[in-house]
Length: 439
Image 1 (cartoon, rainbow, N blue to C red):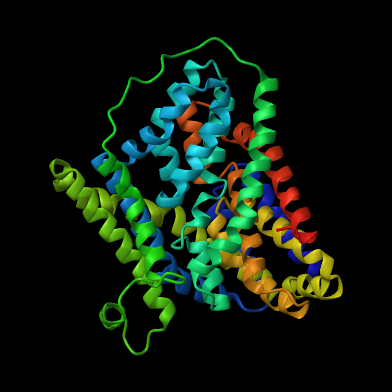
Image 2 (image 1 turned 120 degrees about the vertical axis):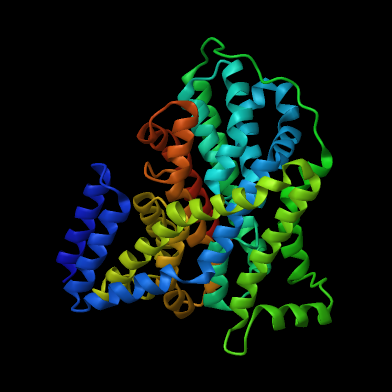
């Protein structure tokens, strides 16, 4: 069984590498694994339950809808312009500055693809004017948009997955995740910065973008959902109890759990942010509903679909018993917990192109073994989420990689190869620091 399972996984990897659609490759492999375990209907059940799971659909689709509303009203550009103003005067710091800007924008926007679309039109001309090669520009854009900024947002679907499994509120998870995200960001950025200098500079190929008058009100709109989510949950809990009770009565029924309420609370925060975008630019308000639902549709097509198939694939692996081998290795060798919690989701994210799918599909494999060796599962969840984000960033089939390649007229595989060394070194640093008890 183990040999056949590994063979199917390898065939799925080969199919993706040969350009076969990742949904088709992993879908066929997932169905094959479930059939191998004698439970083909389990594939169908997992497909339908994930397809209709509002834990993913509500936060992801509303977040992408909000991102499209920001783009339609121009609020995203005001935030980007505000963050990039210093970069016009410190050219030696352009590469790390671009990564930092992408990281910061990804916190409120959540969607990596929307982040790349948001910052690309501003940062790509700026980097071209500095004479940076197209591959370096695309890789810096990709790193910034996808290295893990969204993990500092309580509404991130990865954090919702960990929160539901552990019972720890996502607002409290952010602090633990941040201790992993920042060392990874610093290490990967420094390595990539050195690589970009070694690659050299060419002649400027375009003029820098013209000056832009920033409207601080519009620049603040992207931050509204993040602020709302932080203030509504622990440790602040600034929402009055009567308002909180009213919201729960409106958003849930007795049969629905608190997790459902929190998921819909994220959606509500995104809707409030969308209304704020309309208020900040009333002239564009008439087109916001269409833009919002276009964003939601894009999310379902390009993100939810990957999560559905990747979850089916992961469940197929679980049915064959290979997950029990993984749990056994960790129980017998506790030192493997942190390396495996980083490496396995990283590999899955690189294969599927989705960090959310990797976290959802694999985190449950680590809950029981981590508790068995005396490690809090929510702490391991941060490592799983970060590894999945790193894998997505170095995946040539992820939506954000394809978008960065399109924005810079480079190849997705070339970008993936460019960002892989800094990401792997960054993850190695994080794992070493965590095993040493320093973070």
